[in-house]
Amino acid sequence: MNIYLVLINIAGAVTLLLWATRMVRTGMERSQKAVLHRLLSQGKRGHLKSAALGGVVAVLLQSSTAVALIAAGFAASGKLTLAAGLATMLGADLGSAIVVQLLSVNPAWLMPILMIVGGILFFRGQTRDLRQAGRIVIGIALILMSLRLIGEATIPLREAQVLPDIVAYLAGDPFTAFLLAALFTWVIHSSVAFILLVATFATQGLVPFELGAALVLGANMGSSIIAFMLTRAGSAAARRITLGNFIFRAVLAVTGLALLWLSHIPGTWLGPDAARQIINFHLLFNVLLLLIALPLTSPMARLTTRLVRSAPQPDHQLVSPMRLDDKLIESPALALASAKRELLRMAEIVERMLQPVMDLYENADPEKIREIKQLERAVNAAQSDIKLYLSRIRYPEPDGPEALRGQELAQLAINLEYVGDAVVKTLVKLAESRAEQKVKFSPAGWRELNDLHHRVVDNLHLALNVLMSEDRAAAKMLLEEKAALGMAGRASAAEHLARLREGAQQSIATSDLHLETIRALKTINSLLASVAYPVLRQTEAPQPQQG
Picture 1: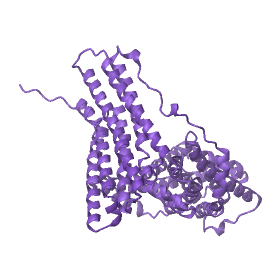
Picture 2: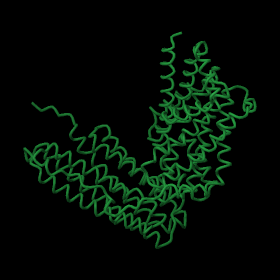
Picture 3: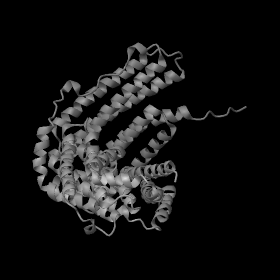
Picture 4: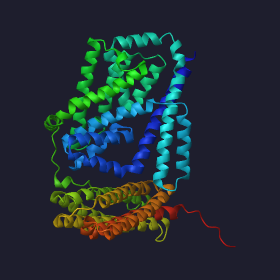
């Protein structure tokens, strides 16, 4: 047996498993991001409901870490209380364990059917959501394929002479196995993938239940480390959620490891074979975690608030410093690059203005409104500085390509300022009007506006990518998204009018607010999409001259 070839095959199959898991999560985020965010933002309505919603979203995303990052973002914006955020994370942990249960069922006929269905949806789908649904189905098929490949690749290991010694050592030293599992889970950033890997090894007779249980406990603690490390540079509210979840999981995991060391836990209670016992043990751990920790979320919130202190943010640090370099005026190419960096900073400020708009529609917080208006002044100043800087560049030819690019960047700065104006003078004013009138959008109308807002924010990110990369494919995608959002806006307006005809009282009360918000979001989206036109003009193939 060539051990190196076996290890290469296992590594390739594990890589496919990690990539397929990420593929499913990416497809779900791209197609249902607004829905997922809206579900989690409802977590403040009660700890039990928060846990349920966290579990649902974790099943859809196949990742408790992804839920942690979303919940941390809501906590940072004040939309999710700390205790509710901790409850959301506990539900997400259980949801991740349920994903392992679902993916462990792997009949031979399922993978090719999923591949065919996913391929049809991806290649023949007429809408973005259908194509992303195809991506999700193909990703699930690839997960099942990778598990089968891992199983086939590990068959020769049963004959290896050194393997029984390694397994015996780790089984006799569960603490080392626990630490290795936590480390490996943190490295690959996926507890789902690691648990499935351990279960597949167990199917081949390579991992007994006792060792698998220690690995499961380590993986659960390692999974909580992932989210904690990813939010370490975030706000205090975000770090408190991931720290609290880490403390909950670490304490229960270490307690479980001690019980595993001191007493024999009969695996036969959990299933007929080692693989099923390991998967069920993982589910049992997360069920117990939810039952024990859910009543303790409020005390844990108080503890993490003491452990993680908020750092005051002075007003003069509200925006990063200007990035224009006057020393580059004589070098047009370098000066244009400096202007692009300043445009990127300007766009990031615009994003900070645009991101919390729907939160203001729910609660017109005067402090947040004051901050947005401060940011608008920074945007106005940046626009003025960029235009002046571009006008001072020493272009070799007044009508040359570099001068033309300078004009395009100046126009983009103007458009970004218009976006800032639209946020402050239209959307913020509409939010204040809704608060003064004390009216509420209909559930359907509120959902439509949130979806449009999320798509505009996504298009802002895409516009920044186009600005920096000047990639033609990305520019085309941005214009496609502009057209798609226009259609979605028209559809929302039509649905709103239909609700008016049906006499829906909430729709009648918020009619002007609803239609004005749609108009403002479409305007903002069109201004952002303008970054694509210069890129497409630059990369157009030259037309043959008429002879």
